[in-house]
Image (cartoon, rainbow, N blue to C red; front, top):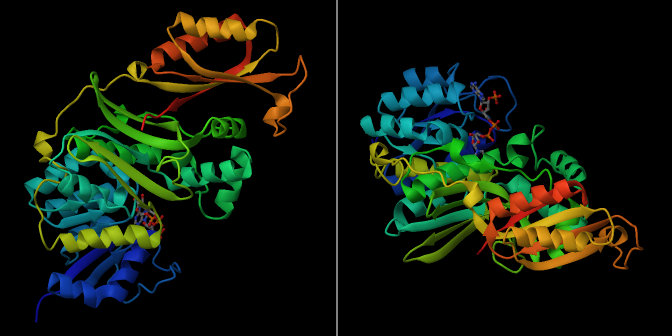
Length: 440
Ligand SMILES: NC(=O)c1ccc[n+]([C@@H]2O[C@H](COP(=O)([O-])OP(=O)(O)OC[C@H]3O[C@@H](n4cnc5c(N)ncnc54)[C@H](OP(=O)(O)O)[C@@H]3O)[C@@H](O)[C@H]2O)c1
């Protein structure tokens, strides 16, 4: 009888359980595709007695991921433990050194150790597959490695974090502030108890670092990603952007510029009637601009048990077909160092919201400062406090007022310096809120 494809499953949480369910439900279908049965041969997690909503007791148990990776009899090590270091990294190294294929959903580990692990995999003729690590169920890794690999990639960008997109969508729909929506998202299970990785942009930055390596053939360099989260987005920003025809999204953008490669994660304004502007809720999307393809956009579930496990099982199936070749789009030894394009050289339009001391001449003084730095204004709109609170009637003279400015194309350096001068001039209260506008 044909030997089964044996899976060593490390991590029995959300995704691990999803993988077990797919293998149980679709095992015979998968067996037809790979020409042999598929079975879970060994499992591990922290707590053997935990109720997981799935009965893992029939499978041989190992005390640690490292022990499983070292001693179990398996063909594919499936790493669903998580974390950039520690148990996941240790066990992955062991499995690869044994020449075993590894399938992982762990973007944090790969964003920090991607090249080292890719070298290890290639030296040992093992596969290291990670479709689930970038945008969960969206098949973007294979698209970049295979279907789009004839192109010179110019830009990759997208909505890479479902929690942030869910929160921004609710702020948009309900007009509530960040803290209120975060609390609701946590109660509903859309945000973690410690949401800092998601809302601070780190999770999206891990994924972006991998997309950059895949798209541009560069070394994986998480430290080069500029990261800004959504914590400072206010209902006023959402409302003012909406009135100007924009939606605010947390975007990850990797783009080739004259200065090198710019990698950035930050809130950005996109036209509300654009395809990306209409991606709402937990849905993710990834857009790729290439020299011959033009633009491609993939939209789908970026997380969740079924969607993420679907990508993991797709990779498990792939280990039976072609493995041991380049982990990224190039062999790991050929991934190139690159120049980090400084963000101050970034060119684009900007949204700026300023809280004004309502005095005669303030408006003109701000416009003059912007002009000194060569910044042309597409629009400048004064919004009184009762307007801001939702009443479109004008406030009375002396009320605190806000000004929302949209600039034409300029540089980040010019905007930052002009805002610094405007702050020094004493015309504004508090910090200006600046959001980049993404050219689509
Ligand atoms: N959830 C998603 O939608 C999603 C989407 C894309 C990618 N991912 C990635 O997939 C991976 C797994 O995510 P998840 O949501 O399934 O996580 P999870 O629900 O927290 O499950 C993690 C599992 O790993 C086990 N584990 C953690 N630390 C361990 C250690 N030191 N030794 C042994 N076992 C350990 C846990 O054991 P216990 O259960 O005993 O505590 C648990 O079974 C992560 O890398 C994550 O970033 C997840």
